[in-house]
Image 1 (cartoon, rainbow, N blue to C red):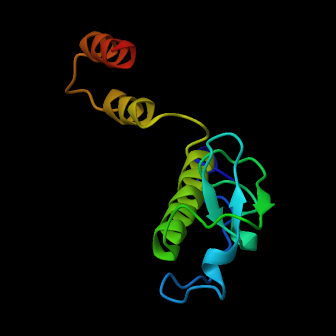
Image 2 (cartoon, rainbow, N blue to C red):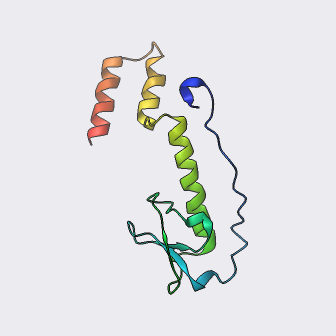
Length: 121
């Protein structure tokens, strides 16, 4: 499901409360070898929200962040993945360009040049 089909990708809501900290929060973490971040030791962070790779449990280190900040990162990551699927991997600039091309009020050669310049800089 995608933008070209006029539908949204499937999305399942996650019921997580940023105010309700997990028990024994500071006792262990989940470590991402790619970015080096120590996430909270819950199932939500079995994959790193930043790198999207598996994390390993580290029972001797605390998470690098507070629970509300971790939840915010997790939910933002989920939104970005949904947004990317909906836009079929196209960038925001490409989508804006498509909208601009539909209008007859613009000089399309100038728009092409501006987009190419903004992508390369």
